[in-house]
Image (cartoon, rainbow, N blue to C red; front, side):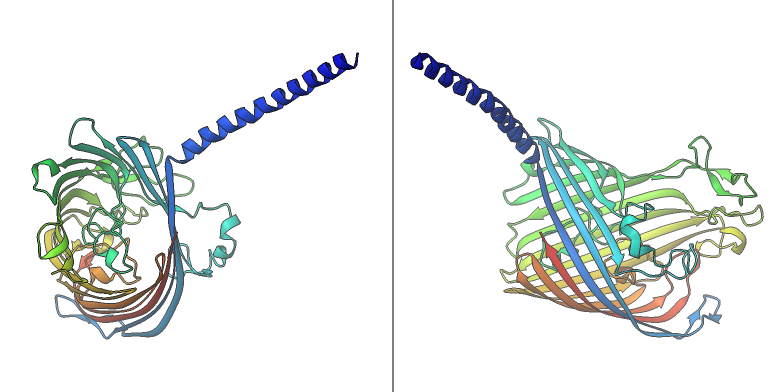
Length: 458
């Protein structure tokens, strides 16, 4: 009897342990599957905090007709604290599909008010203090999000999404990091979405040399609310509850924007450890400038521009086996203005109904790497009428778009592999007003910026 009871008890315990083990095994399988999915992704990020002190001095602006205008400016001690946070997520989707993304937020410290903007002086007063809980904006922007698809058994790569058109060479010099952007700093100066085809010619090149051809399509989109109406040059002012009406000639919903680029690199040229050369040309046509979508029949805009831009960037690192790096960039632009802007009746960089403005900029960047220190200098020579937006500039005064002479000096100290402090000084001497709506005038504006930037990579 005791033996039977013992056998029954052992059987019960055994069945119970098996029953308990089954879900544990399932949990482990699920955990392994989840871990396998997570391993597809790689995460990293950057946190920057920065202090800027800006000074601006301007005596006058003299137009092409010799008319002197503008109230003298002498602003000193314009102090700003700001931050930038970026989170990168990359994925090896398969052996031939890669995904890259970066989510970024940039802001001033505890922004209280922004004067001189369309929202007025006080509308958004103090909104930053409740920004994380105001339910008005996500606050985080997609800086890049694109996929590279290698076509099997070919040298072609098809890419689509938001491309890495910011932080190209020589931006990697500043903090001693690898190049973050595929396209040169002086090429676009903007974030762009689109599609691209890359053809790699490495197999035809000698050992230590690579060559690639890139073709990009990054159209601008121009639409009317509701997506069922053809856009025009401008729109009439809203009246009562009626929606704004379209005015002027009909325009395209997609403004064509094409880029051709050649990438060459080598580790076998002898005079430098690594050489990168990028030659790029882009063009777009009929980019319309509406009169702030608030025109009347008398003030409607018919202004549009066509642009051609050619840039060459040469990056030479480890010159003659040393720790000296040198980057040379040249940008040449031509902007054709057609039509007139509203009641002011001016073009883009001109007062004529049709005109073409030519310009160029030369950028020389150099640095010397000494243990955990980097000593760098940059020089900009910008000609009258150069077309460079600087929408993704790290500085607050569009240093690289200066229509005149400018220089930048900086020292970077790397405390650890992923922690660096950079202090620097910008000096800009603007000889002309920047290319925009209206004519270009002679200028004597001088801008100085002292800054300190602390960067953490993780």
